Length: 119
Image (tube, rainbow, N blue to C red; front, side):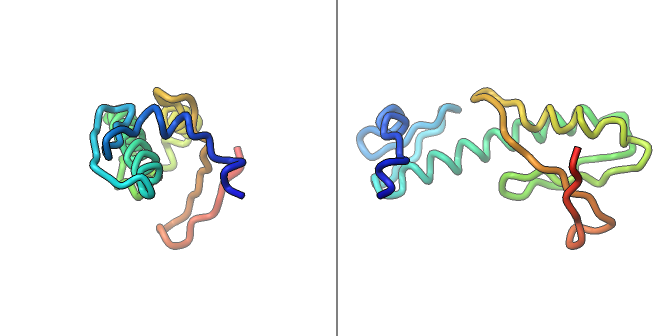
């Protein structure tokens, strides 16, 4: 059933001789069963970390700052006076070398009580 949705050209392009090679040049030895997952997770991690660095630089002269990353998310300690930067930060996060991520924004007084913001 899944074969209908799985484009094997991506797999064939990046996997050879039990090694998956990401678009960022990372090589990971892996069996075929886990290769696509490794490709997806490693590539996503590199994109998130690259864009987190760009956001950190963007906020360097502001009160807000990048607190941490988690999986495919960037968590900011955000000051009210920087509210004018929300869309710019989102654009920096979404744009990457492979195209554009779809993302959501959540806000709250603490990490455990954030709610989605529609922009």
